[in-house]
View 1 (tube, rainbow over the protein chains, first blue to last red):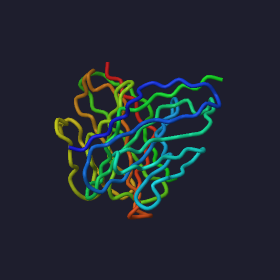
View 2 (cartoon, each protein chain N blue to C red):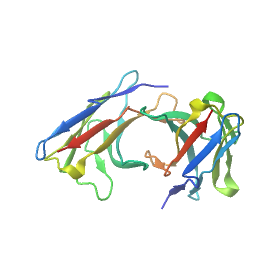
View 3 (cartoon, each protein chain N blue to C red):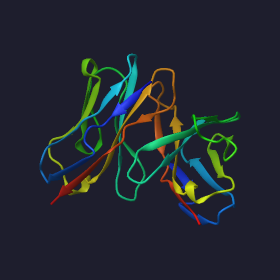
Length: 113
Length: 118
């Protein structure tokens, strides 16, 4: 069965530090991958998505993610975080032929000024 | 991104009553919507897939008679929690499938409905 693993459950950083959140999935076929962010008290927002083509995907707010097929990974990165990036981040997988998304457990990021 | 709304944002009800939650896609038509449940500090668990004009598809372990889904139009899906009990208290989130940029379809999420059953 398909699954998504996010290894870091809680991450604490200082402003201006670099961020990398891990996401690994298990599925042998074609995948679509997403990162969503949930700011405190707000709904999930799409940060970025990968369908095909360039494995380095750029999203909103300076985030990017790299799809590495050989590692079944789709890690999220940001070179310099801000206090406003404090949120929960979810990686999600959609496999070919299925509409539904499979979510990872989420990573709670706290950025201290 | 596309906009999805949910109503109400919060609801408190007595045990044994039914509660209806609406999910609307505001600027696009959605033949497919999804209903999720999110427990505190946990991820989203898909409950069911709502298809316009046909029966919903429920995930394993979700009682279809308890969580009634109706997708009567291309912009509206409703989730009715019937005979609610305290264990049904949760955060319910809907999403709508945006096909305008297919095959790069994306799901957009509503703000969620917090249900508290007393």
